[in-house]
Image (cartoon, rainbow, N blue to C red; front, side, top):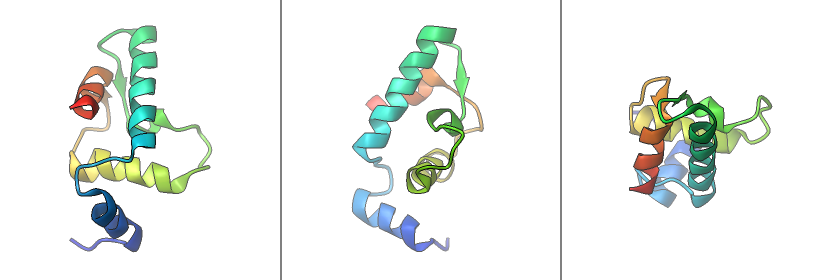
Length: 88
């Protein structure tokens, strides 16, 4: 598998299955908000964790890497599943 430079840096710095704390906290907070608003069966894509502006492309790509490549998640997953995965 050919990795881009930034992808290789993420793997080297954090290990294949780790996520930076800033992103983990953001994911958990959004999961909590969505579950509180729409119930335990609410589904999310990784885009739910970002505004419609591409104001932090590195963080967005890290989320995509974690969601798609590392965990091979579907486009939509239950917020409860994502939260459980992040909390270990």
